[in-house]
Length: 340
Image (cartoon, rainbow, N blue to C red; front, side, top):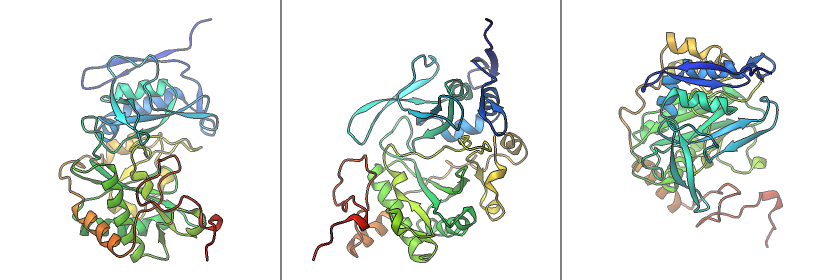
């Protein structure tokens, strides 16, 4: 029986590459009938902006055995058969073990990842040449039950002001779901734990200004109907969907960079693999100059030390992390043993 495979020619910095797409008609988003070939074409069309945002970074692939409603898994090691033009870099994980991860340098590499059934791309906040020191401070604003995207908007605007007071220039994108991701480019002079502390300092300042709307509570039972500032996304080997990455939701959304001026009227449902290529052609890439003037986290670390001095110490780490210095007990408050 003849193979259904097709070839997609993808432009890039090293010239065009002919990328094989097997099973191009396999449906990934059943509600829309969007296929593997549709995904590959999307990545080729947005390739320049996609690589500018996610390239030159260790990358994890969120892959699907069938469609976005089915079984999924993460690839952190390079899959077998990775093309020679796709490089890798060795990174160290929280367990202290190290192994290689993929690094994408051109749009054809993203198309190859789609051929490997990747839907969501998860880049590290550090560069391949300095994996231990992030060059992005990332803050994930996650609306909790009872809140929605519109509740994240005022929190993002206030966070922009908070980070400006700390000397940082901020950029924003939709998460592709209900939340928002705020980024600040920084000089890669501090390791992950310092950047995490900087994020916590900013999150606590935001929480002080919007106590009824924003929370840093790690335990869900304590968050209420507020927007959670997920500080643990700043940890080593913790990632969020990259800019222009598709998401595995029924309407094929994209985690899309927007301008701050667009935020007030933004509807995340409007940014999909069907609409974002044309948006890039007409509006351009709001993150095009993101790396022009990176800041530093010195002021945020001063805030961290101030808060520590006031009795606000470390916050819980993810459950798969080793126990960290100064960390409070990893047990939700309602289950904690009460002491006299």
